[in-house]
Amino acid sequence: MLVKIKKSTKLQETLSGYLFVAPAVLILATFTFAPILYSIFLSFHKVRILGEIQYRFVEFKNFARIWSDERFWIALKNTAEYVLLVVPIQTALALVLAALLNAKIKGRKLFRVLLFLPTVTSSAVLVLIFIWIYNSNGLLNNFLAFLHLPTYNWLGDPNVALKSIAIMNIWSTAPFFMVIYLAALQDIPESLYEAARLDGASAIDQFFTITLPLLRPVTLFAVVVGIIGTFQLFDQSYIFSGGSGGPNNSTLTLVLLIYQYAFKNLEMGYASALALILALVILISTLIQRRFFQTEKL
Image 1 (cartoon, helix red, strand yellow):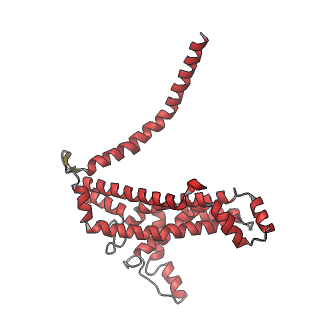
Image 2: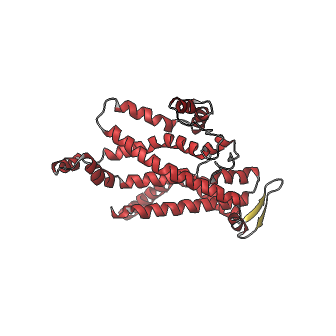
Image 3: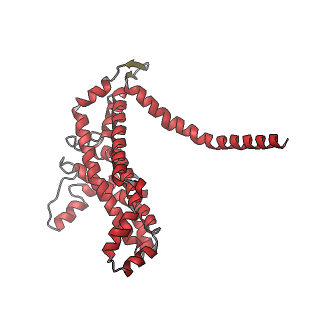
């Protein structure tokens, strides 16, 4: 009798556990796994969505087409340039800001709030503000002219248009990683620094021998999340260029290209193939970062 009661209790606990996770599993299956599987399905088909939806199996033709698509290579180059420009600067800036705010300075709580404001502001609103700042007669050019520095056509010059978006993105996302770095800095035991000071280590020595090594997992997180986020650049590029990727394709990114093929040209199959290639690029980049930082050895 006792054994039966125990089995019944265990069964109830098991069922309760499954019921608790069921909503999360259902949401993940509906909004994550099912779209991924459908995208893989589409990438091997030519899809006609006007009128009655029709699928025609085309094997690997969508993927083969990518290699001869000149706009894909332009978008990949722009995206890679953007990632290489934004990720290192925003990570380093976040670390510097966190180190400054971790010091015992007056008003640091206020500075933390002010610095975090861009992160909680809508991306579309930020872009509209920066369009005004980047205007030929806008705030930035007036400031540069005041300092007798050269001014630029930030939105119309192909040589600086992508960099304009990068500057805005660094300014808006660095505070997010700053908060993560700040939390990690406050977890480092003060006794380590006291021991280092007794050994005669300077503040710079302490930073490079204690702080940086202990922050390596956080740096890995910041770099990986930064790479994934920057590879998916879309909204800023779309609003800046009006969806065209201009001027002269200088702000055309991979996600914007996917959007154009999917919702302007209605080539869902080819757009899905591009999306899978983008996912593969992000996966390879993440594995390289993981290998580089070697977090498992910490």
